[in-house]
Length: 118
Image (cartoon, rainbow, N blue to C red):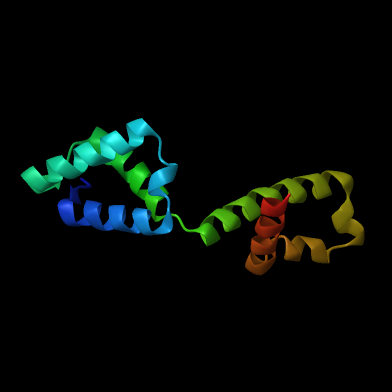
């Protein structure tokens, strides 16, 4: 299915990125591509080029990302590392509840918070 972005979608995502501070985390080239896409969409009303849409989609995801999502992503990474390490060392044999904890979304979020403090 052909994906496309309208001017309205692009400008709304830009506003969200400006509000949550993610716009300033983009590098110069990413900002330039986003501004060029915004201008093009305003003139042509829609962007349908697959290459531009795929790159713009990645940028829009970065702009929409919240602090909670970043913490959860960090927690997921930490939980998968712990799951692998504990499996190798046989921790689940004598502490089976750890496997359940490492799948609990609240505990995963907690791991992300703790990981960001280190």
